[in-house]
Image: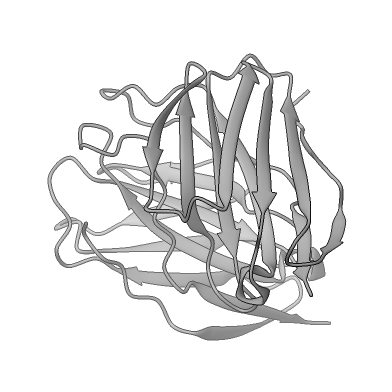
Length: 117
Length: 113
């Protein structure tokens, strides 16, 4: 099974709401990622978790709060978002992030399309 | 991070080969060349990667110039399903941001029946 699943597929939320995005993989991967993709733009890395610990935060505003409860699950908690945060949020996983090997192919989920009103 | 340059868009006819170029003149000795593609309404998917030698897999071939300053992704027989944005990405597994993919603008490939 090489699938990364994301729920929900679509989400509309107001600026005062709190919501969460969920991502799951059962490939035994120990690295998981959140990306943000605006329309007609490439994906931008937000967070990297390695062995369930946050290893990279690409200067993301605190209204985005990631959580990795176990090696298969990754959440992104959303609070007090702005309309400009509307985007496709992609989750990905890879075997590891350790250096020294040629490739840790990343597997992406289909994304959650978020609209902030 | 070393940068890549790709054409914004390309067109191909169905069942013909497609050559997607990528320039990376500032590539370092430890940078691997990765290709991902993103079909409409989907997340990106891995296509192929290489370091110095040409590589083949079931999806595509990767031809790497001898000086490594450019590479070409080759789809041997384009199908309508190959219409996607193709990203050429340099990744240094020994660098400080191991595992990170930094996406450029990519090439939007259109396939005509």
